[in-house]
Length: 255
Length: 255
DNA sequence: AAACCCTGTTCGTCAAATTCGAACGGGGAG
DNA sequence: CTCCCCGTTCGAATTTGACGAACAGGGTTT
Image (tube, rainbow over all chains, first blue to last red; front, side):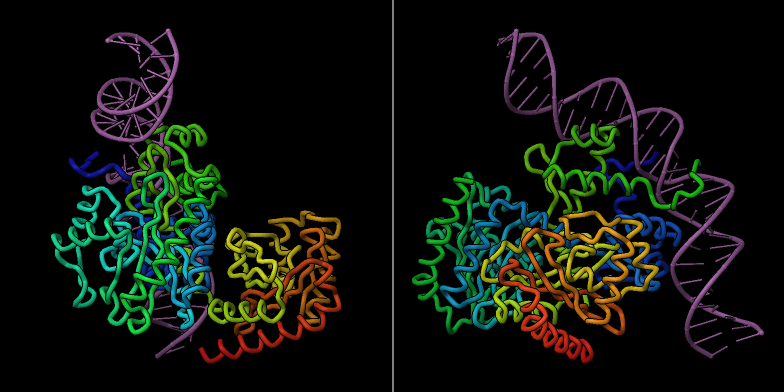
């Protein structure tokens, strides 16, 4: 059969399966006809995939609409729990929030993006749950920059090629050369700052978490600029972060 | 092509895709050969599915092993957030834990089983995260029983037929007739107790959460029997639970 | 150092199964 | 009552997923 030269040999029907899942997410549920129209395939095809998804619990049917099912949540919790840094990172975030009163985060990376794995709202009690699980670019996130700084150069190249360096504020690093210099500085300092590079008025500091010499993630503390001054970040907060990473290193070494 | 008479018309290749995912979970990651052996299919077939999964971020490769990826976490968080009762239930659980000092849970149901959606550890600070997302039978869970009691009779029948009434302790309800009577009592009382029916020495009380006349989930408070006496459950704790459901009803009515 | 065995990966072939489109049935709106 | 649009079912056709052999790359054993 016709297979294009450089087309990696995935399975097409799996592709449409995931297309369906993706649409169900962006639309917060949909019917057979709508899915078929959007994907430009037959209704019966969509129906077939949905039947399998239904049987596996990855999709539920409410009336005539199909919605993503809680099996995703089940698997999601499992995957998070599998991360080497999760258990100890969780405890660290809890303590960081108590000690600093600011938003504290555990993030990791996968496929060139940072993912919020666990967090605490700080005294402002930001709704953490809407942020958990979301993926963001690494170059405008303190934890993300800390991770990037400890990744091999060629991997950083591939990530930038793939995802670019889009601007979020006027402070976002959008230049390849500037990023390289920043990462160099981060490596020397051992921490990364985010001075309104993602959201205007939000500043943060992040440190990398390495396991067996590989960056697995980062811890970060974030808050409004008036409280999270550069001085406080590099002083008190960094102190707490160092203590946290030390304990994590210890916990993981004796896992 | 040969299609068995009563075989629902799902898509077979999607089935093996989910088989692969399931094995990757139970084994905490696996290689191509191992997957192919377990499923008794060709290595190249497995490889094809894995390639698609990899491309979509649902699987990651560490060395020669494939593991489930954080895309599951991403989707899982989304699905949880979509639940009508999540936002208000979260706040309720937080408050219940503060007020009672005991483990507090928000659960929902899907496919005939109860699923832990959100929880707090109480003063004993149980590790909630290993429990979140897990599915349990409804008949030995206080929240589960509260849900069952407010489901149509025929749906209860289907659930029992499908999942049975397995025993967890000597107190577990394992008899169909006895369950019917218990559910009747729960409907009248407006709450369900769990007196060591799941884990020996653990008692709990749960109340249903209904939205537009349909049970969407339940709130429950659980703890060691010596603290969670029947009297305390039906007194102080029930009081707090009622306050919580009232507020949730209000929040959802004005959503 | 060389032979071996394990892995994951690639590729061409073939039959199986996905996809299609048309037809069915049911519920709500006009 | 009629129409329309929904999800569902079904049979046919050809796309394409599954196979198995062959390749390549690390480790380990000989």
